[in-house]
Image (cartoon, rainbow, N blue to C red; front, side):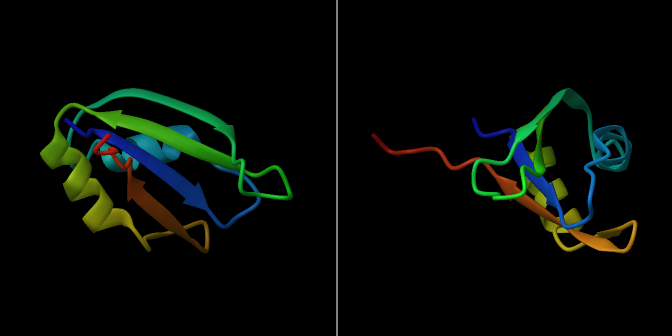
Length: 84
C-alpha cells in the first residue's frame, strides 16, 4: 500500500507543519518528517508525509500538486513502489 507523499516547495523554506495542516483537510497525517533533497544543489528540504490511507495520499497529491503556499507552488508526488 502506497501512502507516502514527497512534498517540495519552491520557496526558501519548507514549513512542514503548515503543509501537514493543509493535508489534514483531506485526511489523517500519520507521520511527517523532512530531509535534505538529494537532487538539490542548494540543500533545500523535502517533506515526507504518510497519510492514513492510500486514497487519502492520492487525493492530497491530486488536490495540492501545484497549490500555491507563500507565493510558490507545491510539488506533491506519491512514492513509487518498485515491482522488483
